[in-house]
Amino acid sequence: MAKIRQFLASDLFNMIMLILAAVIIMTDQLVASPAYYGFTVFYAFIICVVLLLSDDIVSILCPSLLLISFAIQYKNSYDGFMEYLWGAPIIAFSIIFHFAFYRKNFELKKPKDLELFKPILAASLALILGGVGIMSFAEYTTKINLSYMFCLGPLALLVYVFLSGLIGPNKNYTEHMDERLAKIFLTVACFLIFAIFEYYGEHWAKFISDPDILPFQWRNNACTLLMIAMPFSFFMAKKKNILYILVAILSCIAIVLSGSRGGLLFGAVEFLILVIYFAKADKEHRKYYLGIIGLGVIAAIVAVLKFSSLFEYTIDRFTSSKENFRRIGLWKRSVEDFLANPVFGRGIGYMGNRDLHPSKIGTLCWYHSSIPQIIGSFGSFGVLCYAYQLIKRIQFFKNRNNMFSVTVFFSFIGLELMSLVNPGIFAPAYLIIITMLFVFVEQYSNSIEE
Image (cartoon, rainbow, N blue to C red; front, side):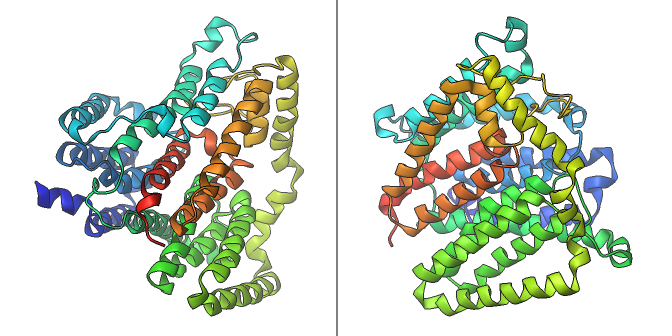
């Protein structure tokens, strides 16, 4: 069992997960048949097996992120996943078994020892009280309101507390957790890059006949994950080999090809910040970063002059009143919703704006921006709670002066930037990912050498 657990915590296991995911994409089964939901369920099955066999919770991270990378590619997927609802008891049993059987590895920490406990609790209170005073009991107790309220609040707090007791030095079959974590996120980035390039390969004839962006439904989600992962490319380039920077460069190309407006704008901002920061921090490779800036400027000029048609789709969406009508309308609605209930807002599950944003079954009617979301959903109480959480998060990173914590800080910034134009931190998967990264920083910072 020790050898099995070491294998599940190894780079080889993650590589096998990546190759398997790439094979699934190449065989076209992902989009060719209604049975493609089964591939996501297959990764859920792998996660269950790992939970049963290994006492290392970190070993489920790579297959979990790949599962998310599959799930984001499905459009109108609620009914498809409901067909696999029979698997929920298996997942629940695996989680309960893991915590019960390996309970000796768990160390329950007091709230006073967890720096982000109070900030996450404050956000949870904003979610729970959101809509109080204006929502009817029937509206408040809808499945969509209760589920997102729980996932974005209490669940995030539970994940933070439990992971804090499971993650730490000498617990997770690895000597250098910072490197292991970085490699996992780069593995997921490589899969998303491959998936986007493969999509263009499938539609190559169409792309060549009319060179322009080939839009696909999951572009914003793909860019969000790529922006969370991008800082780890720079981290590994500094710590191990400058060639790791290629993952960040390929990520930028994939983001451009995705056609995501938020990805194009904020991905470029994040990449530029990372290049400037690491050019200063990584003196050994400074010439490479300066070279990247120079080549980037040249590539941008050439792209504008020679391949301007390739950006027409994304640029048109930036300037189109039809494309921006809903977002601007939702931002205005957030103010109206705030004024309707200034203390606690409309609530996270409010569906009164579906005339502007006809959200799919099982998803929120988002404002598509974190700031209007907080203002409209949680009122002045929510603004104070989320402002408090943001300040505490910044202090959290400021108190930890090592390259690993700086890298995670940039991942957090990448997610926050995308959240300005996308659900971002109000999508449970991304909130759990960034919460998990906070745990790694908190538990490992003192043991990581500069």
